[in-house]
Image (cartoon, rainbow, N blue to C red; front, side, top):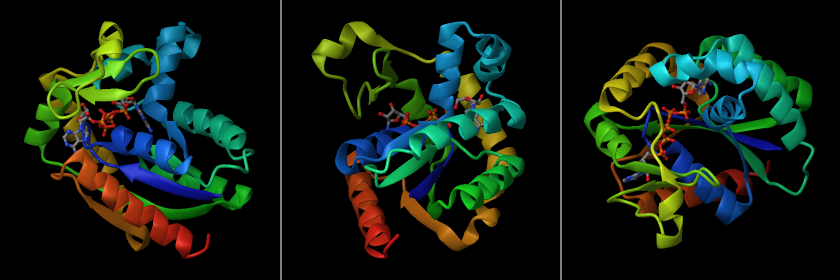
Length: 217
Ligand code: AP5
């Protein structure tokens, strides 16, 4: 099974484009952010432990993240009808990347590309400050760039970590902890021009998936 890693700062569009791959290519999507927020919402012990870390914008300890990924990856990879899996927001540290390398080997998976979403801090703030999430299904919208349909309006929420101050902080954490992964994955980087519209980036996604799947994987 093919894997794609989406790497980029807060608001760069990882979740939006992952949704596109699900609806257009029947991909599966593993978002560590969504999984952690679900734990918080459920009131589980793990959720209680990670809530303040997420709200502040710090990284949740590697041990917790790697355990979550192991569980989900072994479940999702059983479904042979899906052409691939998108990792959205994982890995975020070198230790997470090394744990993923071992999982890929032991499960005979194909890591096809690290898709690099590049965005300035200023644009990240504009996108995050207008973001709205449908609490029923985690679908992501934007007040101006991607308005939600009317029937979703009663269910739209803003994330706890979506203030300007926290986006600035998350951006710093990204530069320090996660951007160095670009070196780790340098041979498989596929760069996305995130200044384009959502529809333009869908086209870049089409090209990526079609070329990678055509290469036979
Ligand atoms: P996570 O949920 O992964 O947040 P993030 O990486 O900061 O990314 P976002 O979800 O904020 O942005 P996105 O790139 O998906 O953008 P989106 O598509 O929504 O993580 C949250 C927290 O969980 C972390 O801070 C950490 O505490 C913890 N965590 C998660 N994973 C972890 C890990 N592996 N290790 C440790 N801790 C972890 O788009 C944003 C907005 O812009 C939307 O409104 C959208 O409609 C709009 N938009 C998208 N594309 C465009 C475009 N091209 N033009 C105009 N608008 C656009």
